Length: 201
Image (cartoon, rainbow, N blue to C red; front, side, top):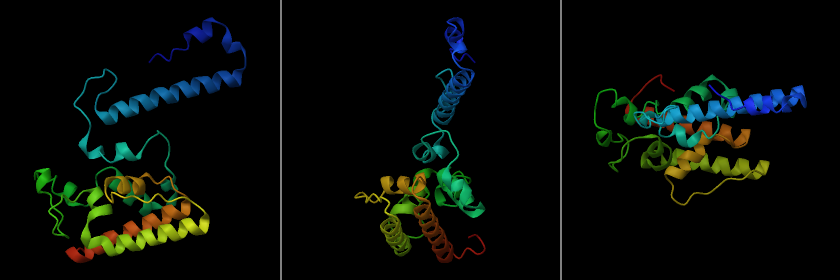
């Protein structure tokens, strides 16, 4: 892998400061790693050719903007597991569980509501009518927390894709992240209760 540092070396600019040189090398390596990471997610690789974007990462590619450790990782095992599954397209929703049975995506309908929509992450987080009570309670707590801690909460008008991505990005204050996680956990519990699933939450 060429980092493009030869010109710095040949020009003698590396003699300016050892620490500055280390910072420069680290930042260039980090930039190359991020380029490779984005290319891998998009399914193109270094050559610019590939199989196309990985469909299971459709939400993840919109949530994760930079190659760095996410804040929610420090919140505990349950939070990590639940968020990772939702962001990576591996949550126990019909979009994933019925994929394993080779059922076409448009037939992976939500079992909770009668909208006929595919039960994917966006539907689960923002659109499922059967989870509206839990969703409303979560948003009340998010807004209350924002008022108490003086943080900003964006109010979405489309109540769909943008809202779900905002929830999954997890860059909000710690207090807001915890309210989001409580709300998502409550939505999972209600889903499991309605479907008669035991011991999953």
